[in-house]
Length: 614
Figure 1 (cartoon, rainbow, N blue to C red):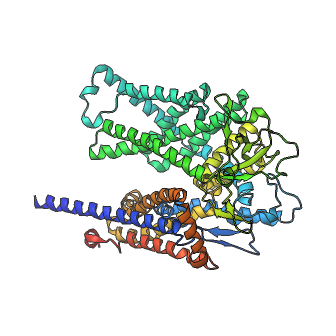
Figure 2 (cartoon, one colour):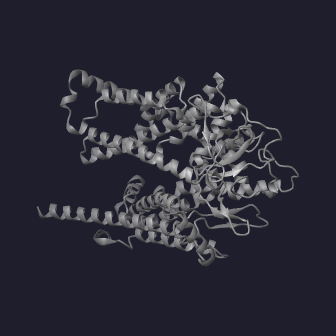
Figure 3 (cartoon, rainbow, N blue to C red):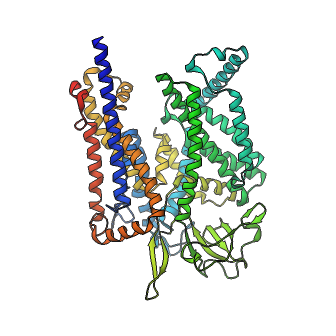
């Protein structure tokens, strides 16, 4: 009929408009990050350090369209809670530590430097020496509380999962599975069992994971439990109710405590074993949730489950094969080898041979890289120092005498941002900046494992973080989102908060627009979640993330070009260098946020739909 034809045309028009908005967001996000990072168009981290009477306070922002998009999608409440964690760290705790610690004549443990001489961020900073431990305690407590709060839902999820499994077995036994409709046909359970057994064998045999029988058993038990929970919570309630962080923290705690009871406390191999268990269970639980989302979407559009599941397996395998080498390459290309100063370790100190890294029973050999590797071709042994009472923690190359010769600062989570590349005509070193990649949650996981197995955490700071989470819960605020941002730099929370505020402003307009429809709160949220602003924000995230990967690779393979552009920008680009760079670098980000607001208000990309509604 003519009416159905008009409805179909309207649907096609809406889909075309949505595709255009996502494509525009993708292009803008990609171009924005490329210009900023490859061509040094503007400063990536504009900041403001406060002086007296607020010494130690600071505010900064990561110029990232992806984080702006994330803030818009999650909304003002969650974005505000996340930013509040950073605000507590950078506007309360760090200034307070600075205020009380400036007069101390000796370093305050766990730091080894006077507080008055410590920077706010970076290596040996207040943030890394104190706030990270407070944040670790807050996240651990928040994760456990989140998990406890979810126990009724978790129990329901386990019961539902077992019931589904039993029903599936009954169908197979009665031959009913073959007569199921196409939209209810899953991959055969026998292939699932074969896949599980194959993964267990591979995980156990891979030497880099340093897995043992107990670790494999924990992966099976905790993986089955948390994948079931994650799948049902995400499918029935939504991904926002899926306590992945809590389940990961619980896995690490349970695994580390089990190792502690058994006396398995040596860093090599048990730190890596515990991390492998936690990482595998975390990935499995995350994939369980996203798979449920995919299958639910497929059910709505009439997809075939077994075909979707096959595609998901192919996608997971492809990402594992592709992303692993990329991450290894990024880490190695940005690793810095620094000669160890004579006074770093005590005179006569030698690394015990049993602490050296072994592979296949043999001591692992490695050569120095970069500038020093060109001049030093000797093979060294590898040592990971976790005892800060002997010297700075980290990876070292050890000479045949047992004396540490080089510190290896990794590309991921490393702190040394300049490396010597040569010597000029005057004999002075030529330095080049090195891109470092943050992985704060990896740091948190290492703190949990090291703290339990080595029993060397500064527990006073950790307990302080625990009490912060407890206080928030007593106020009726979910502490996990707050705690996660407590141990991260405030620059990572600021763009999310801005995105949340843009969403708040757009929602005020949309409430007026939909006032005549008398929508409930849930209906209003569902309506706004498919608005033009959400589509553009999704494009920002995808474009910015893809550009980030390509930019990181360009730093490896086009380092000469990027370094030359960087030096030019420092001298000639006021948006990148100079006294006003921090202020001017905010201009592109503000333009990005304003454009997101205009699209959300349907003042741009309004189209036919907006005209009819308006």
